[in-house]
Image (tube, rainbow over all chains, first blue to last red; front, side, top):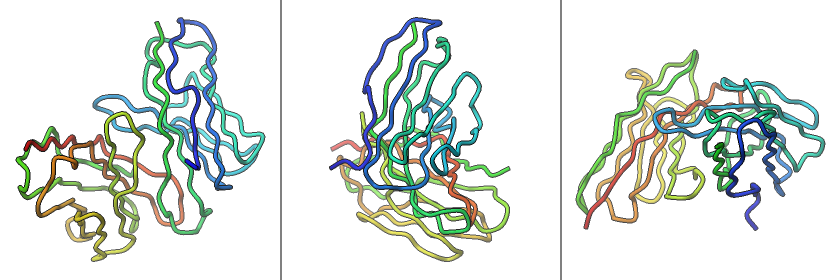
Length: 116
Length: 112
């Protein structure tokens, strides 16, 4: 009954390979986000979505793409993984909409990605 | 642009000590402010929030007051427990927008 799940939880991949991380929600929230967490940087926004097929870039979007073909799924793809993309990736969801209050996010448990 | 600045960690305390973790922000207008907590190996959980000046958010013995005049939202707890050991993140969002901007986090270590 987690409401938001990420898969896989851990992944090791080689430099230059494509990688896709999945975020799945059962809350029917409109907004979904992908963040990466690195020591000394806190959480940085990669991409976010405000509806099916509606996505936008965050502050560290280079080398990443996203897709949202259904309300419940938000996919993050590393097109050609590099060692600098070794990180912990978090998905988050929020209800509300533009002009409405921000009630805060619900986070997934994270995906630890290692690029070797 | 919007930003959040938190005190450097780790903060190391003995059980039952008083806790303050400082957070200041820069934003246009009057943002909503949040504290999140992250326990080892887990995602972030919303701890408390405040949406306007002078609001006090509280939860599980933690409190923070939205101070517009000092652009601050410091986290406090009167008596910490070992189970409070975690990383604490301050965050803001502009009114009417859903994106959150996070601070770098402050690690709290509480010893028995």
